[in-house]
View (cartoon, rainbow, N blue to C red):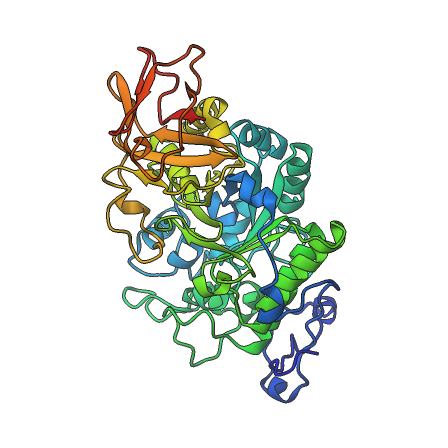
Length: 525
């Protein structure tokens, strides 16, 4: 029993009873729940308890520190529409682009709601082994599948969301399970992402109505109690459509969230659990983290190799989890390993999307690794589950670059400084900033990024310089430089390169033919 945990009641009738009676399977909140006993958040036995103090003992596993690069499939029913992220919410906001598109293509949300779009997600060309084979070849060391987004739809055979999951409707296939088996066959660490906690508030737009026009005041289909298990049962005085604090929700929803994510982790035991936010709902979220770690420790002889990510810096100050910067980069070299999660385009697939260039992605990867971070990169899958042509081109470019330069990426650690150049030496933001990637530009040959592996130093020159590369921090007079450089190699170039080191820096004469199209790596010992 966890002292002080809030009282809950999951539903007036059990899911089984409601199913047999033909009633909706939604979570129903009981006003008398406050008088019920505190919940018993049962977790797997092991070295961790669901408390901040206990979880501070966790340490980042070596496999994660070494991996550096993961690929993510941010894919689900919203991908079926192929019209961008947050479709399930925005289709209920009159005047938004996705609302206008929905009315034009599918009909008005009073009649045709998100529930009607879910069966359109067919995944008819979904081949997880083929996809993960491509990702492994491109250099990914771990793969992450989205398991549930804010749309309240589970991508596994969900015990606590029996009507709205990928086995019951849509592709009628265990997507999480299929990806896990493919990851195992390809020797990749397996991760899942969950975005469930904010759903209670995020999806409230489905209960609204048009404010103008012939259907003004007519509720959208989310207000139909028959579908409360998808759209949530909300109080009559709820501030529909407003961005309410996601960390505040009714106790029954907190318990439902706990049971859903515990069901996911218990069944698939991922190596990494990404939560879209921080550790939600305090004791509920802490219990989920402890359960993940204990299950993993039981599989590894008492040693926990699992990773949990949080976007709240204070969660990860000591042990507990890995800090995640969504679409952003930490400033300088972070003391603890961290992660950037980003996408080559929109989070959910959009037919009109404009993707990042291969150079942009590779620049970001090298920059992140030099700062003690990992990159988890989303390739948004369309309805079919098959990468489009432009995505395949980007993936192929990453594959080519990694084949030459990966030894300066994997299993490396930061050097004394992460880089040199006008961008690297610009005043840093305070600790790092989420969503700061929009201000990034392609790095040039004037920028250098450093990594180390043992006694070897790698200097990545972030463009192809004319005739020679110049590494200023490796001057003989620099306190940063090794006592004496013995040899310099250019990765991907078979012959020796000529180089000199003096009080100005290290100068490397380059061949006429560049070994790769993006950042070049100098191996220095």
